[in-house]
Amino acid sequence: MIVVDGGDLFSDRPVLPDDLRAQVEIKARAQIQSYAENGWDVFVPGEADFSVGTEVFFELFDGVEVDILAGNLTCGDRSFSGGKVIERGGYRVGIIGVVSGVYSDCEVGDPVSSAVESMESLGDVDVTLAVVHGPTEVSSEVGLAIAPDFILNGHTGRSANNLSSSDMGWSIGSGIKGKRLGLLQLSWQEAADGWTWSGGTAQVASQLDRYRERLASANSALAAASEEERGRLENRQSHYADQVATLESQLNSLLVGDGESNSFNHTLLEMDESIGEDQPTIDLITATRARIEEVAIASSAEVREATASFAGSAACRGCHNSQWEQWSGTDHAGAWNTLITAERQSDLTCFECHVTGAHHPDGPTHPNNVGVLTGVGCESCHGPRAAHITAVSSGTLTSALASPEVSVESCVKCHDGDRDDGDFDPVTYMEAIRH
Image (cartoon, rainbow, N blue to C red; front, side, top):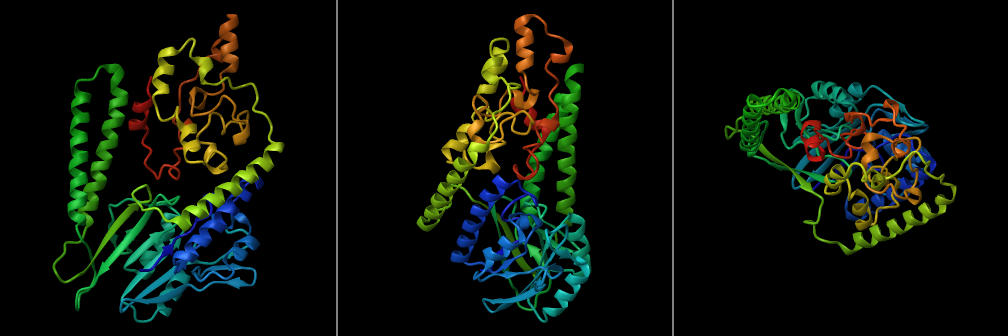
């Protein structure tokens, strides 16, 4: 087995406020310790990994046995190798790493020329993996230049199990935020050339059938829809049609195994309760949470109070009881409790999407000043409503204080493609919270 990480391990933001930076550094030390104790072969850093500061970044890796691959990255007098050959099970696996973007206190060279040079340095290998940290277009340029067998982009968070093959090799993924572990299993055939995805055709075909059924259902609903329902149903139909087109394209791109190719299987393993408990890991997590709690308590003395712009969801119930009842049965309402259950309520990277108003200038800035704004409540979507409630009570409500229409923009602050692993679809998600 070879363990590879494609970057943005410590954070998803290249620049952090001081209080969040302190927590990220605590987590980073735990992540490094866990990797080091369980085996780690290659790390291609992301720009967000330097959010702890360049000096801290290098201090974290002192004494850790892992190859940091980034052939086009220079940080002061520090430079990195661009490629490495690992021998396992009688096979030589060649891995290269390049980056793109802005890295704090570092210089980033041309990723394509670095990839070409690193690929040439590998020599005779049985399989090649290019790990790129950067935008999708950089992965494409690198892949077309060196044609690796497999390419992993650690920046985009690509996690789809529907793999695609092209002139740039097989694109694989593992998702982000430690939710999944990408497992690439290789099987060599004697004198074989190229790679075929075992079972890939059947897997994509099965998904395609499901989306075709959803599209047919959407077409039927649209045909019988009233005029006021048409807009919403047309969006749903368009969404399913796009999914069908994407899956059809992926199905057509899959190589057909002819018995003369090496084969591979790609699986995304969910990092959930199905994974057995490991006591050393539990102890490490417990100690890390305790340290985060200490930092949160220490920093809470400087926390400003949330302004009176927000009233809390309970204040809306008097006039909007049916809407409140619907909301109270959604996951949004219990968002804060999920953090408490997971003992993550002091985690600054979590709390802002589990309370009301944290993304607003007048909202809470710290877990210790959440008050009545626990959960993703009414004002998360409709904005601060204290002035609205006061105006209703005094009979002075004007159009300026009326509740605005909910915009998708209020959703994507948390459903941003990173936190939700790219699963957010406004058409289907809105149906779950509509009231």
